[in-house]
Image (cartoon, rainbow, N blue to C red; front, side):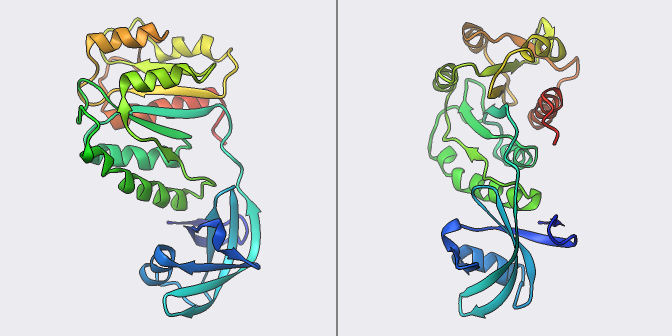
Length: 261
């Protein structure tokens, strides 16, 4: 949860708040934010920390008043958090075991993924969009919030509502100029390094990575990807776990497109 603040130069915790609670150079802490900051993290009058909010703003604040289930913190300094550099990375993932998915969401926030697009496929852990998946949305939101506070990111990464692979590819095709990578552990004619050479010459605002779950993809799904102009690519001879493949691909794209800033 902590880090070194560029404003103060000392280790400081960070918390996210709703911009509507910024009133006359003070931030009003109430509800879940109050509970987390004051009750759970035991911040009190005189405590200093950073508050992050939408729009990439960060405020170094000092708690001046705690009363009942509310607190007020005055703003000492303000800084702007740079937005994510383009092209934005979109991680489309065939839903794996929920524990694995939770870890992927957290690390995607830290690595600067712009948006996650969960989908169901023939071999995904859950093969239909049902209540089990819908009930995870709140948990993913909390994971995003926690990882944003920890990493000092200036926005909350979006996690889309789960859809079928066909629906997602249809949406992808409408993005106009988006580039897509389709890693597959089966027979793949090209290494990802070879695939990226021509892609780097194209101008785009979005790069999509379509990662399969533990069960991989069916032959019909491979043909579906090919119908959208994507062909299998490999990360090498070793078979990677879902979470490892996600982290490796995101890191590769960030390096190749000079997004490691």
